[in-house]
Image 1 (spheres, helix red, strand yellow):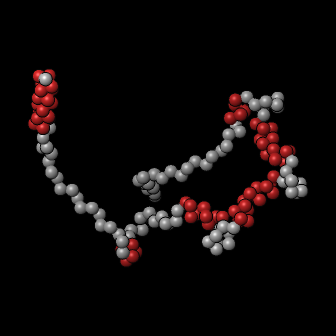
Image 2 (cartoon, rainbow, N blue to C red):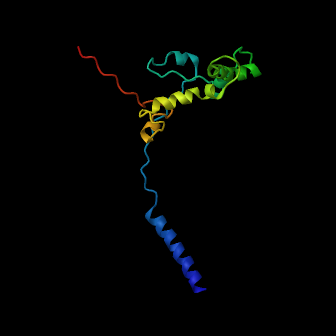
Image 3 (cartoon, one colour):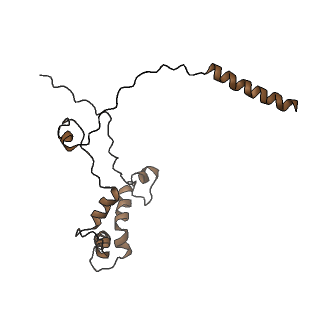
Length: 154
């Protein structure tokens, strides 16, 4: 029982020491007022020309919907939904018979393999295989703050 009381006493002593040592002595400084919000249309017209353009309220999903909705009636029909697949199929169907043979389906891959096989030995080593990776466009990065334009000398 005495161990329990000793533990409680030591815990209380640590809390008291912590309050004594770490009491709040921070200096209170006045913060600058927040910038005024631009809400009124007349204030927007008076904005600096250097302000960045405002983003549209359309979401990514709305943009995707608009790409499929070709007749802009607010609905996507089955034909509109499958149009991109039909175009891709038509590109693969090189002889136009409405059927894909294995050679038609694999033509792009076969060409990619032949281009990558520099040694013409029918096999790709690691360096040749690395050339077959899909080339991705880098994402657009925004510099914040934008880099200053160089001053004209003259």
